[in-house]
Length: 231
Image (cartoon, rainbow, N blue to C red; front, side, top):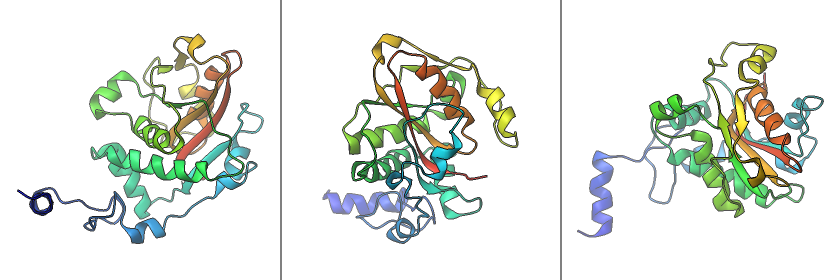
């Protein structure tokens, strides 16, 4: 069967739809349709090292750079994108988003290329339930764009935490503080690490992870997320 015909048959039973609006994708579109790609509320933080997200971490933890690709707004189509990534078994969305963010960083004249990428880890129980770590998929996309290796074993979550939803900033930090550890510190010593998550709200999880990574001699940490849910 010709590939074009096979593609048409598969599209009937397994339609490719936009992760934001749900409309069928054209053959040349990937995860998001052109209209939704054009409407993404971009932050442009990669062009400004002293951007509002970086300011969130000032006085809390030593961060080299902090970027998020777009603004997260509840009820928007782009909330649906992240929901599809995390809960609807569509890990390819993470790789796609990571690639797009990576292209932005690669073309930035102020963003310094890291030595390695480390995703915020999931606890093994949640990983088993979901089947994949969405932050790891985003990291894989970033790696494709930046040409930087991903380390998925260096940082581990040592215990399961409660959901961060509806917690205050301080309570969020208490919820995740001390819940992460570095495995084989020698493997990351002296590295500039790009720590990756899907969404940042108060920054508590990223802060807790960064503190642990910065305990390793010579480590520097930058942060990258797909979205910023500004409070």
